[in-house]
Image (cartoon, rainbow, N blue to C red; front, side, top):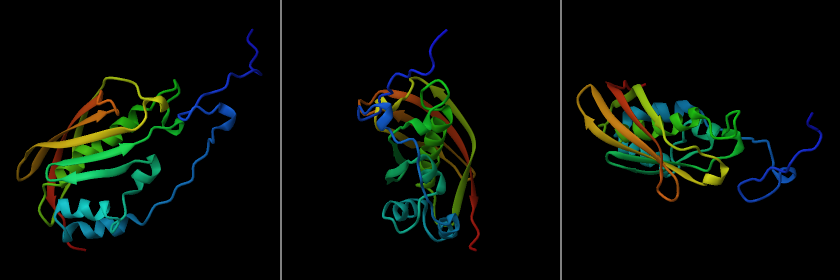
Length: 184
């Protein structure tokens, strides 16, 4: 039998031991209606630039997971995340849902960046390939979304999840439905 009363120290991202790691997190977000109400009044790229500039709030999911929009240009969007234990699955690596959220956000916002004023999008599928595990030791990861094709009703985008050494961690493709957004 093993003695479960003895625990090995856990090492965190900064090399601190388990006794020193804070395992709680408090976060807040702004009313998502603020950003949603702004969509019909901006081109997709201008909308993303307003978020980057802090004039519009980021979506609540960004606060929940702790990721941020880092770049936005026509046909491209980049999100960053520093993984923590709060992102882990039961086997000690980042949960696949975190990968999916980052990649869906990057692909979707890449599509948004090419949309004219008064248009919106929603993901209609996401195909994801996991290539490498992510842990706290991985450090900052970047989800880079690019538009492959944009038509009148649908758009196709891809997104790559890369570490600071530019290693590919995961890849996704996403189809998005495009639609007019009524002014509220």
